[in-house]
Image (tube, rainbow, N blue to C red; front, side, top):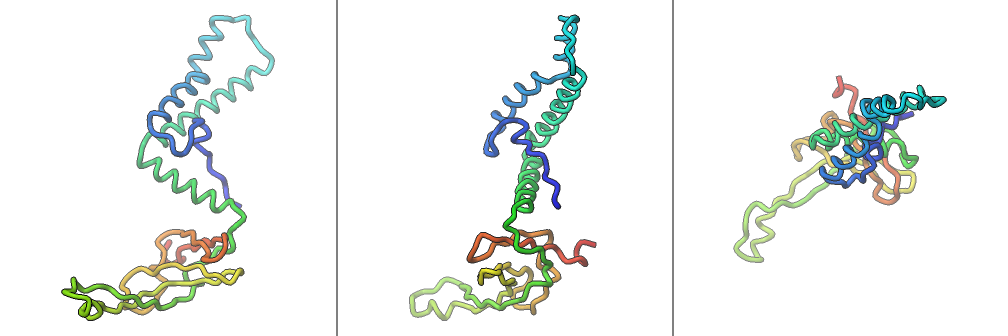
Length: 193
């Protein structure tokens, strides 16, 4: 259903919390093991060393070399790494079997939540309630099979009427309030066009 993306941390044999220096050190060590020029030097030094399946080994080394370079080029750049981490997390969520449903924002029902906001600093405790203003915020809910709810805060002007058109700018993962299931809320078809 979903294509699992390559795990660049696994390719470079580092943890996801590794800092730049750890990633760089691992990259340098791994790239030397499968660099095509390095392997060619070994073959020139010992021309009698022809092994059955050598073509497959060279092909695998070249594949490893390309994967290591791709991982390094992504993880060395902080912005690319941040985007990659987000995509990897999204792919992992989608690969899990704890997804209850894939829905669009229009499948969720709007609920009105009233909250109070401070308008300013009060001089005393007696004036504290007078300086609070009640605001209406729209949130969106979807019922889970466990009886809990998936809640998504609304966007836009809090006092305007509910409308799901601007609810999600991109796909969102929303957790149930009671169990470990999640839903994927897809952006509305009109938003993606």
